[in-house]
Image (cartoon, rainbow, N blue to C red):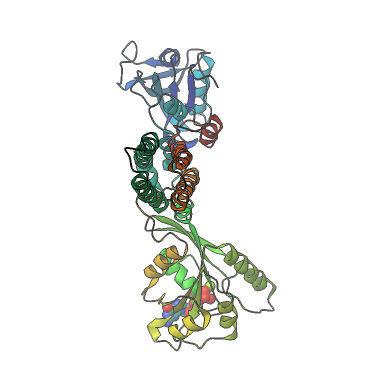
Length: 452
Ligand SMILES: Nc1nc2c(ncn2[C@@H]2O[C@H](COP(=O)(O)OP(=O)(O)O)[C@@H](O)[C@H]2O)c(=O)[nH]1
Ligand SMILES: [Mg+2]
């Protein structure tokens, strides 16, 4: 990929919308823009000033009313000359304007993520900050958006750079102790390296919880399951604040899987209501039961609902016996008292149990919080890493430091830890791209959308 030519792409989403932005970046950005855009009054484009005018077709006809801005290098996103054309949105006009820009022969279409790749290659941002840009664009929940924004502001980079600096200091200590054995006590140095390395490893691990990262990025799936008539659909409606699921006292009403998306503590929850599970002669209900089981098996958390007004039935017992660590037992209808004993169920089936009422709303919020905890999204920290690539690099750094600790504890010669220190540093700086190989960098930008 040539990185010195001029590129252009539609920076806004395709489809109906007020405004679309066509972004042009590279040495010929201004020249290309002025072949397409005719200012209404001024002659050219003043730097950093929005100018009103028209997009002119090849035959001189007016294609659209538009605004244009010229941002000279180096204070731009790519650090190159940038021009942006703001025309009307919609399905046809933005593509016509982009086609006109490309037809000038000065510009080629940008590859996915190429604007951001240029920002990275020019040194304006590091690799983790570049990835954060895509994280911001793709964020589904507030937690994902906030995490990406922190990362874009250099949150991950600051941690990585500080850790690398500490590792460099340890390297210097080790080499001083090996070079001047008479002046520097190797034992004292070993203990210091051990303590510091352990501290860095713990800091790394505290930021790397793959389940929390997954929950922040992709959201979690939570399923309401249970026998018919226990109040699954009512709980779904109470949790989602809608009347989406049909509630009725006739058992077997819900037959398909209904899914609602809601955001709790910033995390996207896909909450599914399923058909009540029981033996049934009704073919359609049986298909619903089958779907319920499949949804349950793929879920991050299963809320198994029981009815507080009735003793446990054989259907309940069968479902309880299938419970694993993804299950939270929810005793519903507690507004009318309860014949069930939460503690007995907890002890017999080794599952956490809680009480709620879909009708009064008591416990419904807590039920969602506890479901998030079951999904591993309960303790998402402000500074948690959310990008899988970062977690994998950080994991490699932590392993290298663990090897170092073993070496020191075995009492092996201190200079043996040099390699582990280097490996830890290398793995960490792959996060910011300082030490990343070309294929790692390419694969990061391949996942971008065109126009960013
Ligand atoms: N008293 C009381 N009744 C409830 C509660 N939740 C649901 N119900 C009633 O239980 C019946 C079955 O509810 P539904 O949500 O359709 O259960 P599902 O078959 O598990 O989806 C309906 O008549 C609801 O009004 C609750 O918290 N308290
Ligand atoms: Mg139902």
